[in-house]
Amino acid sequence: MKFVGSQLAYYLSDRDFKRNSKVLLKYLVLLVIVIVIFSVLFHFIMEIEGQNHSWITGFYWTLTVMSTLGFGDITFESDLGRFFSIVVLLSGIFMLLIFLPFAFIRHFYVPLLESKKKNRVPRSVPQKTKDHILICSYDVIARDFTERLKQDNAPYYIIEKDPEKALKLYDAEVPVLLGELDMEETFLHANIKEAKLVLVNRDDILNTKIILIIRNLAPHITIVALATDDESVDVQQLSGADHVLPIKRWLGEQLANRVNAQHAKSQPIGQYENLLIAELTIQHTTLVSKTIRETKLRQKYGVSIVGIWERGILKPITGNEKLSHDSVLVIIGKEEQLLSVDEVFYDYKPNPNPVLVIGGGKVGLAAAQSLHKNGVSANLIDKEPALCKKASPYCNEVFAGLASDYELLKEAGIMDAPSVLLSTHDDAMNIHLASYCRKLNKEVRIVSRITKARNIDIIHRAGANFVLSYATLGSEAVLSISKGQELNILGEGIKLFSVAMPQSLAGKSLAESGIGAKTGLSVIAIKENSEVETLLSANTILPQGAEIIMLGNIEMRDKFNELFVTEN
Image (cartoon, rainbow, N blue to C red; front, side):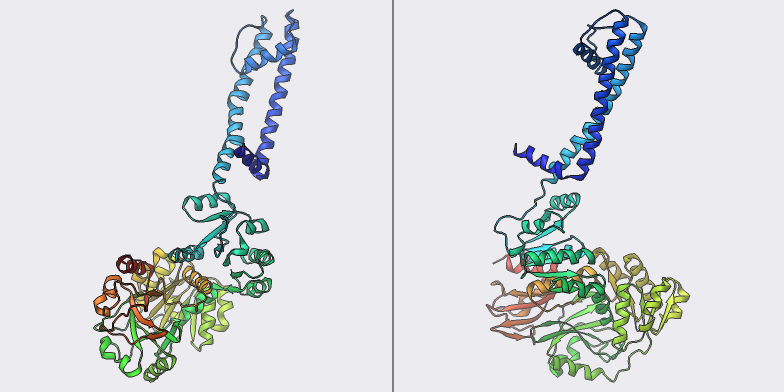
């Protein structure tokens, strides 16, 4: 009875079922009318033949003939009666044996099965659930964000209004709630008042409505919203969002920060307490062809080299690595130490030619604006003249046309450009252009956006030096807010990990631990009693009770846990 009640409740609220039920009802009314007409005609023809039967008998004969049972106890003797019997029989075959089962299956049985499946998806969180994170859409940012939440064993739920999508997520073992995003009941069932954070990641217009609903229900909860258009940032903030993230604009700015167009200097990309993590491009400097030990950056300036970017791959260091024009050092130190490093390279003349930006959409426009703000000249290519016109105030020159056109690329300055920034939203196009630009200019630094994680290795092989995706930037930004930390965008898939010292490593030297060789992680610092030590060597002892600060990706972190933490 409980199941039947739930099905009826679903039917009465389902729009598709209401529409189907009207069709089914109309067909049943038509069927009843046909049976009544055949029963009346039965009496008229029987009277012509001199037979007299009751009305019950008439309905009985009609139903037995239409259902093809044909008991034969009541028959016509005239040709007219037998012709009428054929008409009733054929009508019954079509209406009772063909159309009625089809209508029943289509408008009752299938919806019944669908409702049974859809009712598997929960509408509310378990009782006493608290400190959970609610996400309003399972988009590319949410996918990356939830992977990080799984690493931290943090509870989360996706709110999905589409029953089909919700069922697919449920079957994929993704925590999901079925409910309308513009209804208060949905968020009450999600225990919004006890939640830690809500990520509102629908379109800008719907986001505003959702924010107003949530803020009315839970005045103190942290609301993080994503904004596609810069114009929507203020609207969502005024509606009650604590943080509004214009990710596409940030993506353009992050990519612009990674171009190589000015004097060789350190570029801060992250922070840990009072220490800055920075990249140092060494192209055309005296560090090229030297080993890490020969650079003597630690002895002269107090900074530590904690990794090397080589065409998108962050490599841990041993001290014997030989640097090339493609090498980008990852260094860590205090602000004054980084400034002292910068002064050494200030005499080296940068490439004065404009950076080439390919793609003038939201990301490309933001990149052009950021370059213009930093005093970097840029040329832009886009196939849409309207986008070129919009970007022209921030560019040296704009070129309308296809970026794969050799003559157009040459005119835009690919042969002499210090950097190329690929900002189209098509991964295949970015991969194609990365390979093409690398063939045309061997020394150019190629910075690109990417959408799908599976294409990261491909675009690096095509020639890109640095790659960053919309999903990574968005998920890292939301995760930083949820943890109350500074946003660190170190590179695609590269993250900063702070791990309590495993018992299996305590007392060993850094060389004896084999962390870099076994996992690929770069140990950048050790924190003990609130003191952070970054000047590490192979002989540095890993003290018990300390924290290890490391750079690497999630796979490397999992390997570290498997080798050193699980052993405990």
